[in-house]
Structures are given as structure tokens and as C-alpha cells.
Length: 349
Image (cartoon, rainbow, N blue to C red):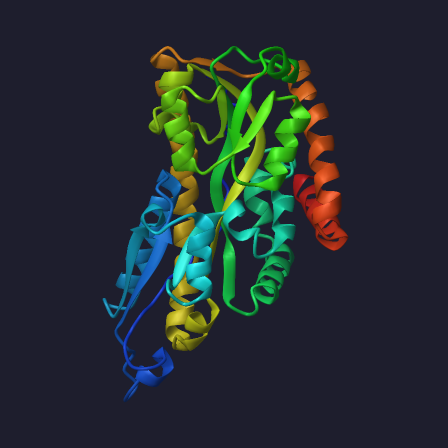
């Protein structure tokens, strides 16, 4: 397997940590200088990065507070859609979570900008963007305002580098049209616009769980998403083909209920911030490794895994980029468009 998709890991993201306790705010629970005992929850994805990040964060918090601050990690698939989980955090029903861009973009639609096709030249720049203080501060302030002061945003880790998985050998976008490919995409307006622009015969938006059922039933020709997810979900065993387009790099955004985080004693807030770096490393390393291992396993199992050459990749870019740019012009503020382009260009030097 070629290694062009496996550039050196950088650090990024964050997570958040919840806390639930009885009897008022955490500040009120402090007596005689003793920090309160808190039990909190973080809802995370079932992918390897989400699991690893939540566990690393939980363990760091527990150790740093001598067991006084306990964080329980919960797979959010048991709680509803990613949008529903986001709303649970806003309402204070869940302290912390990490969701993909589609799960937060309904709160702040400008966030769809980070899903612009081929925005990032490599993983290094992808990681670095959400380590840039000015950029993260801009997202934090706007998410806080757009959520009506209910969300405290921390940062983002890798959700996935998204590729194409299909029941035909697809090398260039024209192959999508020639085979009249029906593709499932995330419930994301920009993703629907992009795949329509790429020439898919039909674009169907559905949740991940619905996607897996549709693939198994043979009612879809193709899906797009992480290689690890497509392999672990059994989708590649049915579809049989993968094209490493790398068309979108998607983040997993970590945030908390703003009132809850503000109520934590300052010492606990600092512990949360320290745990961020730990969670970042664990989350991104697991996401990176999951893709690498899954591609090797799929090839060994006989899946057709194809990496487009430079000429073919330009055809994907020439179709996807204009479709994405046309979409964001009507959906994303020019200020955030400019800031994103400028920051990516600076980090790419």
C-alpha cells in the first residue's frame, strides 16, 4: 500500500469532560478547601479514535484528581443521532461529547467550511489548523454565540479521512456517471452538493446505522467515509472496492455544556485543559492507525483498493472543489472562508 495518505501525525483536538453531582454547582460544593467529588459523562463515537480519546481523557482526569473527578465514557449511538446528542449537551442533559462536523454544523452552519473538498494538502496541515490559537478561538467564540451560550468548544480531532467504497471499479468521476452509482453520504448539505457535482447517479443522505443496513441489503451502490469504519462495519465485504480519494478530512469536535464547565472549580478546569493534550494524542494516533491497519487487512482479504494517480486525482479535484466552493458561498460567512484559507495557506508553507 502506498503511504501518501499516512503523513506524520501532529497533535490536535480536544475533548471535554463532564461532570454531574448533586447539590448545586461545583463551586458551591467546595468546603474547607477540599475539592468536590464529581461524576460526569462524555458521549463519544464508536470509532477507534473516539474511544481512545475518551478513555485517555477519563483516565487522566481520574489520576490528576486522585479519583475525585470521575468521567464515564458512553457510546453515543445508544443516545440518538449526533444532532440529538449535541442538543442534549446544550440542554445540560449530557456534560461533554465529541461529534463529527455534521453534528455541530446545525448550531453554527459556518463550520461546514472545514468539510470543503481537498482543503488540506496532508494530515499535518489538517492537525495544525485546529491547533492554531486564532482559528480555534474564532470557532469557540462563534459556536458559543450561535448556541446561545450553551456550548463551550474545546477543539477537534480526526473523525476520518473520507474515501469512496463501491461495488464497481471507480477510478475517475466519470465512472460514477457511467455506472449510474447511487451513493450514501452523511446527512450534510455540503456532502450532498459535492457528490452531485462529482456526477453520482443519485445521492442519498442517511445516518451511519442506516447506511450499514442499506449496504448489507444491497440497496446502495456506494458509500463514502472512513476506511476503518467501512471495513469494521462489514461494508467492504459487500461492496468489494475502495478508491482512496481522500476527498474530505473531517473533524470530531469536542465540547461541553457551557454552564457546567463554568461551574467547575478552577483546579478542575485546569485539569480538563491538561487532559486535552493527552486526549488529542490518543485520539489521533488511534484514528491514523485504524486507517492503516484496515487498508492492509482489506487488501489481504481481496478487496480492490485503488489509489488514483496524479492525473486521475486532478479530475476528482476539478469536479469536487468547484461544487464545494459554490455551496459555501451561500452558506458560510466570508470572514470564516477567508480565515480558513489564510490559515491553511500559512500552515502549508
